[in-house]
Length: 264
Length: 331
Image (spheres, each protein chain N blue to C red):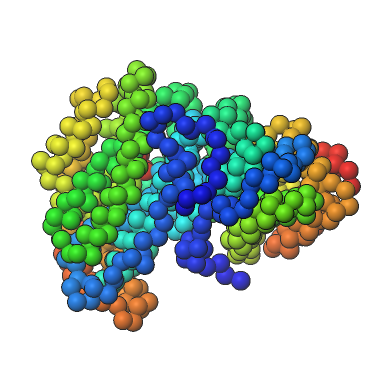
């Protein structure tokens, strides 16, 4: 299935929540654990620009379709951050730009070196590296869709559920882009397959690991991917990955849960 | 837009540019507002179409610019990145308007740009090295580099604003005028943010000032010009920025704290014009191919002929040199 980039850019929009009655959160506030997960998701969405940077240092920054996608994707994710910040604000949890800056500052040297590493790798390996980024992006977007839908189901709060499903719907379009790109690029290059397999197997971590503390990662993974239901979602993401050319047998999401001791 | 839930996210310092409001009211596609049919009866001047193709490329170069900017501490400033996110979005749609107009004249500007083999290779090497070099350099400098980045976007906005004003003067086609009015309106908010931010950062940091003094003259102007064919940068200056205008823009640059002695635009203009605006053989072939592609795609297109669009028949291949700073100054 081809991804129509023109159609995507023309219909790209910031997620809407003005028609939803957020005052409902004042009467029916969300529980602590859910707010903690929402805070995590909000931070990650705001940090998309850091992932954008990691993508751009590879040769993918020259491709017209890729840059068109990145422009819209980056903005849509920013607005997911805004929408979630609005939910948190109804619970008197204020996420502001200055605090995000502090989070990014805490990343320290690991983060500073990262684009260098990416760039070196990307440029040594060449365009095969774009495939790695695309499959990486696909896994992250699959995870996001699963996480938002699962939280919507679990919480059963109608206003929250509606907002999360709207966000998930946009994330699903991102999946379509990344998965299409990844499938094409992996299909064309054995080298890209080997590289992607190696990178995912050895370096992939749940979205947000590396930016958020391990405790927060564990909390969110435990809430959304723990237990039989959560594990089923994780297995579905792994099944998507395994259907990519050259990536059969990979179980990176379930491995990441095991590694963090998330109950099955 | 009214009635949207606003969070109390802390961007509410009085008189400060409201990044959240800017993001909320971002301006998207303008394509449906452009009366492209009107160009069938009265097309734009061929030189206008050629220069719009260049402007499209410049407005569309945000990801290349961000690539070099985001590897520096600038990416850690969430207010700046929130601005840049929307800035890139709006510029994408400005570029799209120009693309639509060029296409209505039979030119498909989405064709990859032609560069001579030597220049292509040199650019490729520079591109590969730049994020690495910038990352090390700028991270050793620290947050002062944000002042340089904001100054560079400010200067770029001044150059392009002047260019659009001039373009409206030399080809006052009513449809083009409407588009350019819209573009200037969108870009006005970009200037509001970056001008104030650049001045504040330069005023408060001697390091930001000295870094800008050293780095800005090494950049290609306008931002994105480093990856254009040299003939097209020359054509941009030849058509839109005369010497007097270059002086006026430079005077604005000199008004920025610590940059009193810079002569950026005059220097960039002189350098560009030395190369000449006659398309090289490669550029000429590109323009021909772009015209052919658009014609095939649009059976009822209101095209002018490719030779009209290129303005001059390509006959010579000029020797090229390289610009190591692609996509503007980064550190």
